[in-house]
Image (cartoon, rainbow, N blue to C red; front, top):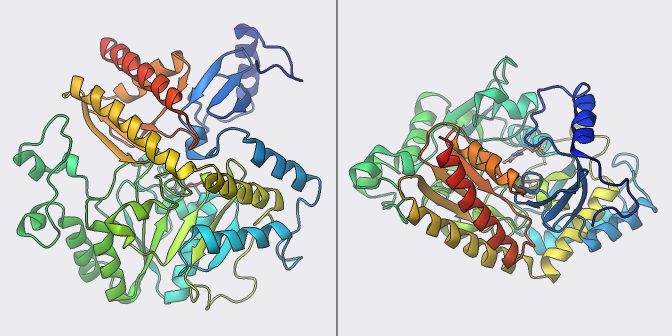
Length: 462
Ligand code: PMP
């Protein structure tokens, strides 16, 4: 398989030599997790130039949502590439695919209260623009973000990112006006340990936000923001609270019950915009169109959603969906970008939305997500002091290991040896699972089998 119309498979030595030659042109700053050359992709699978076939549970960091080269996305892209590719957004009023996409997003994908869209090319660019919108709309300078959040690598978005110091160390000065609040992490909360939670535990006791217990633990992140608004950034100077509904790069943490709803109340009280960075958790990844809809009955009700990654199945496309009045203070020319709303990317996004709807993809995410979780929980029950948490929603699932340091990377390397692509997340020992949203039952089973073997190898190797 995989050879149609392409070079025959290369011997491994030849691949190594070719990669070494390429790496001389590619800075080490761009980390490489696997020294293989991708040649062809189909569904959940990627073939490499040395003839290996990988089961892809990374999906290009949650991007190839409809699988590699879904035939309907391919044909939409091919048709658009032969029609018009770059109908620049300032030069023309629109192109047909942008109009189609806006209509689909509004009628079928994004909550009705967020009818204004801005299209650009990457998650980081969208995040930078979200900050511009919030600052202009509120007339306030500051932004509150959460510890462990990841929002991108531009100077602006890097300044909002605290998932690892490697993203910012040496690149300062950072953008001012950023305040970092703690993120609730029940697993590592001392009070949870007092309540007897250690090792793998299926469900932590999370007290209601207004109870005295909550003041001791999970209520405290909300308290911290209230204190922050009294001591560091006055509400009158705070434009936005920006968060990932499921904290992605920071370790696939889910918010405790009531957290998102309480944030909404706080933002409403102080006229602060609540921005959901759904770059990784959005576009169906969790089983609903948007990750925040998985929690508190969707009561987070953001003022602005940032989307990218999975929305266009791998084509560079990102954007904002905002309240009707959000852009009101921004005059012509204040936002834009040469490639924003590229016609081929818009065609891919339209096709992606159609595939997700017409092929029951959200239902598949829910079913396969449950299967994956169940399998990982069974593994955790066999190794209760090794796997300390299995968490996530839909097909955004993380497994945290107790340690030692490096064990999550050992596990992903052991899986890659067995032809399964996985990634780690965060500064603790977490392995993340991000298969394409069309993944099948047998593919999830294959992955689970490889994870069990890889865990055994990682433990043996420690
Ligand atoms: N926000 C979140 C939540 C992300 O996960 C990412 C990428 N991992 C970004 C923003 C940045 O997106 P991009 O890499 O497209 O700039």
